[in-house]
Length: 147
Image (tube, one colour):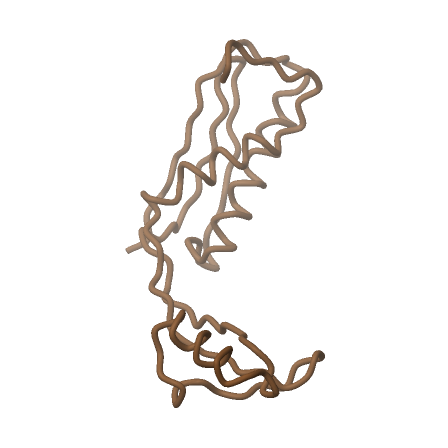
């Protein structure tokens, strides 16, 4: 089910001349992070919002859970000792028969493909917002105490 997400941050007084740039930068960073992990659909739209003491972004058509995706893990070379290949298989919890051979620029290697379960938005939103905040174009960054 697709929902509308509103992320709103209360701040100290923001410089009026920077409001638009800060809001658009926050929107861009957050949308990029959500799209990268598959939380946004092709119909998703985002709208930045800002006041002197508030930054916000509204995003439509956000998924509560990202889709499952295929992950490919590359391992040792096909010329590697059998112990290294067995270690790679054991580390990934698969048998040697589940490994495939892939041609890479570095030569032929063993690999394993699996389906990774989709992530939940509630568990991933806070780190994405924090990362978006770190990317804001702030001329003079202020902080108090140890935080």
